[in-house]
Image (cartoon, rainbow, N blue to C red; front, side, top):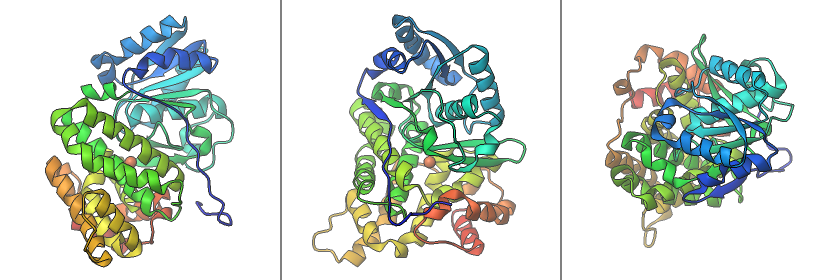
Length: 386
Ligand SMILES: [Fe+2]
């Protein structure tokens, strides 16, 4: 269970290296962590974009040996973690680099868990069940969305049961997050928009979470402001300054949600990812307005600041009125991004709503939502955007 012990809170983040061209520091980072043989975890798209060749060149410059595991897909599967850890152990690796989106980073975290804790990732699904320290882990995100490079979360798909398993443990916090905004330039516009909406969801859910506190709030609200400023331009023009803004937004949202955790949007989203293998950011984007409408009365003052961060002028407006503008601002952004707004359009089956509502109620992210919901109320939220 997630809970506050006598108001004792924490703020835990990796070392952060940020800036255009910072990928060139990857070899030095791996060597500094004591690496001699690196396992690089990635996906075929990143190889095609040329980033892996560049990364391997920097490893060679530091005389590091390496092996690449590239069988990563969106919504990483449990068996892919098994494949990766076999390679890590067989090749005697001692450092792990994840170069990719959230799927590559989560796969790398799973490999790191099993390298020292053994067994299967299923055994570590839940809160604080990873006990032995993991090998040195460096994450290089190629999307501005998941925050997985900053967080103590990892999500895996149990392919047999078709459910998403959430591992939450401070032990899996990466050692270094190396963020190079230039890596975002090879993303498709669709992915920039969808992962950017994941960032916005992280920031909003962390900001209104029952575990939010003064160390997480400034990052969350600044992330919301950056998304409002940069996401549409980043999506439509791939302007590097806008992409850099989104990289910082993702970083700050990650800093906030890794420590304040998330909420009902992620709880409702995970069953859809598990059952239909849908893109996480896209599903969050569809669910976000419906969940915000329901959460509105449970974190009222903060919703006024969310609306303000998204461009609402608060001067001369009653606070109560400002609160009501937050969902509208989010809906306008989704409209500007031309993202889908109905789950049925993503291929989900309405017959699964009752089972999804039960799964959502049990999801770890529901524990820090500002209020709890009955399964009937959760079903109503799904139906609202079906
Ligand atoms: Fe997310």
